[in-house]
Image (cartoon, rainbow, N blue to C red; front, side, top):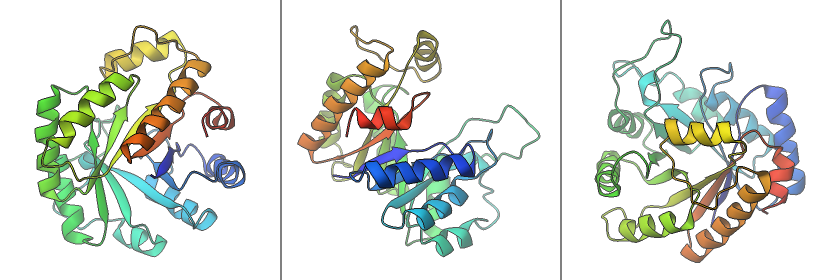
Length: 252
């Protein structure tokens, strides 16, 4: 089982402090995944280059947004990935930027996966798995197309209910992707505004007993960790608006 933590690249100084914390206190973590967020100046692959220097024993996985990739030009960051020794990436579709002066392209997630596998065939490419996007059957069919394009495994949107994880795991086992590795996502939703955002923006489903508190989220994360262990699968934690040490310290 692999245990990953998703770190937001706000500033290099902030990242370095989180690298040090993980190295000192959370030896169970063996993987970092870093999203590419337009509101911050540090690109995901640059952040992963720094993490490879600070924590060479950990795998570092940068996110790439398909709509940022020009289908007519070679991957501009390919040399940086090679120099940093990055061997895994996550490809997501990406939301259009609020600042429309930024260039975006009509590149689909499927097209981007194919491009990465064509230009950097040594990479392991993960794709997103979103149980809230549509019906579970439609999502499984979408995963099968991503796998045909070259995706090796999947990172899920965060779950908040073990029952939903059970249902999807059972359906996944019956699909043609059943032997693909999955990183099951768990995040922290603290506060009613945050819960409303997840319901409206990501169409997330919360159980009736959900409480938007750090304690509830840590308790669920511990349960999810045991569930993932029983499935012989992988997990990633995505701490949002909580102290990293307090969050992980209540789980690992």
